[in-house]
Amino acid sequence: MLKMKKNVLKITAVLGLTTVLLNSCGPKENTPLVYFPDMYFPVAYDPLMKAQDAYSDHENEIPAFVKNSFATGLAPVEGSVAQNKDGIFEEGLLPKNADQYNAGYDASKNLTVSPLNPANAAKDIERGKMLFDRTCATCHGTGGDGQGPIVQSGAFSGVPNYADRELTVGSVHYVLTNGRNAMGSYAGQLNPGDRWRVAMYVMNAFKKGAAAPAAATTATATPAAKTTETTTATKK
Image (cartoon, rainbow, N blue to C red; front, top):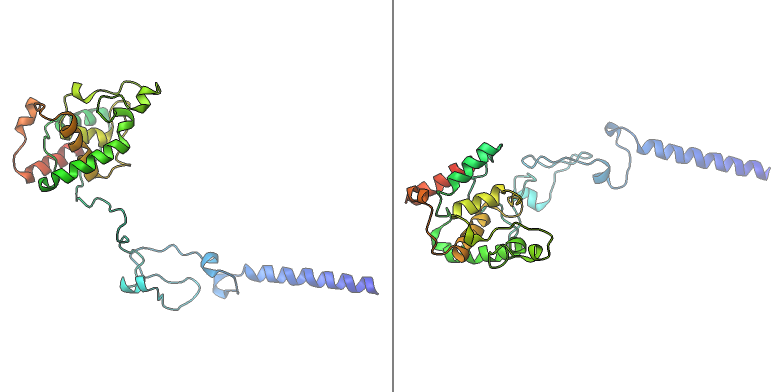
């Protein structure tokens, strides 16, 4: 009799557990009682639409969403990294083949002035130095002589000395954006404005006083035209 009671209890426990498991997998139209419904019914929010819960009809009262007309696409947190705050959008069409790359590189040598606000040149060059030392000096060296720590270790070679190259601020920026030879693109590491700042620093620190290439004399003097030329050249 005692053994039979134990068997009945075991069967009852198994049936009870099975019932709970089956009920927890019920359809959404007959929503069961579940723990952590936010995880059980995940919602793929459209950032421009009103945020709604998949398992209830109550209004979403998150203050940040309420102030944004309930949309989930919020503005960046103050102090976070800004995306292209300089308003430079010249990377819309990157070169797709060698001919486009070479044409763009040749055109970039005509650009002798950065499209950034010239009134901020000193600060831009200062930031460019900081970025160069952090991002470029490992190969190019802090003196721009192509003798950075990686080169001196013997792990890599062939990095040119800036003093031996015909450069303009436009060509330096073009190479930072698109890469050249063994150097890859740094568009993923530096935003458009910062690439111009590094290019400005390179020209100021390592090519200061160097004569511009003859083709560069055709660059238009007006700031607006320079910006337009920059955009056109880097899109090639």
